[in-house]
Image (cartoon, rainbow, N blue to C red):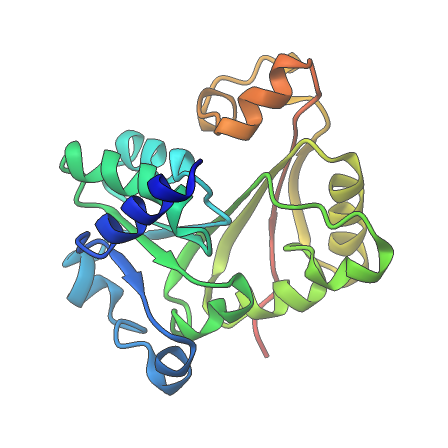
Length: 225
């Protein structure tokens, strides 16, 4: 994407009412919608699902299309990419979609205790170097953040092309005593017909073109003490 297009997207992003972006100082002082997503933003009591590292927002938008009795929030730091999901959801009049532009290591500032029902992590950076393990979105460091706002029965979904991240996440689940619900190393050769295979991100399609096995894990975290 050229610099001119990026600047145009950044400018248009400021006009979208369903995009929430604040400075670091404003976030730390208190995100105004925290604990109020149901009543102040979505204005309903439907379950809230968050996609972390949503990129262009394809998964967030497609989930919102398929499950109109749920609310969906895409989170990413790249505003120019997110513009695509913002534009599409606005054009289609999807009222159950929101986006947050922020670093994911600040995610606990945006949601209150037990405010979120599900988390999707779709094709995150696997952070392959050992010294960057803490930056993996399924590391204990990040999972402890999710505990602060995920409901007791809340589910986490991971979809990835990276075997390293898949194996690492299974190890974390086992070591931390989390509840593994399902794991599959190659979902597209397993006769699965639901949102796990029917919804594909830009990067997922790219890897599928090279016949890369796509992996999926679904699990639960223990209650926050």
